[in-house]
Length: 93
Image (cartoon, rainbow, N blue to C red; front, side, top):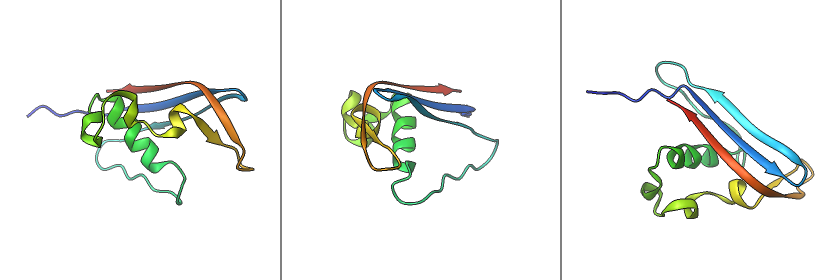
């Protein structure tokens, strides 16, 4: 059996207000993603599935499966909508 080991994951959002992003490293064994509601857990998982080329599992094809937070806008701490110009997902396997 051949296993797939995820090592690093990075999301880069180029917005009209500058660059935003997220980066994490996966350790050997079980990795748990936790956070408050609306903190980006689902966006992280959807992005991970998309970067593996398995987006049809989510019921779509191509960028239709990506959430608005990777295509349209991100919310600032003040809840202002900041328009996304481009976004990238990097996965190190």
